[in-house]
Image (tube, rainbow, N blue to C red):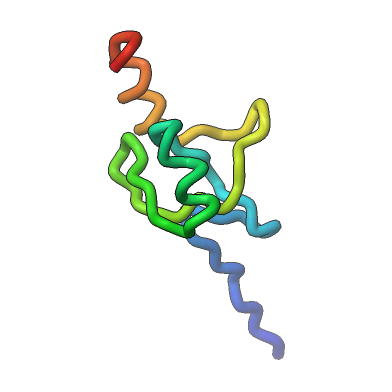
Length: 75
């Protein structure tokens, strides 16, 4: 008898190591994080280093989107 172990994934990654969601981050912090490896804080509070850039149509963190949509232009 063979027992199968279920696949385990985290909330932030998928099978191809791509993030499950992309987060909204202050634009001026993205390049710094990508070059220096520093961590950024997303609108939703998630803290992480920038390792990938979103492509058009990439899934966006629903909490970040909700906060972003509530901001006034220029905030």
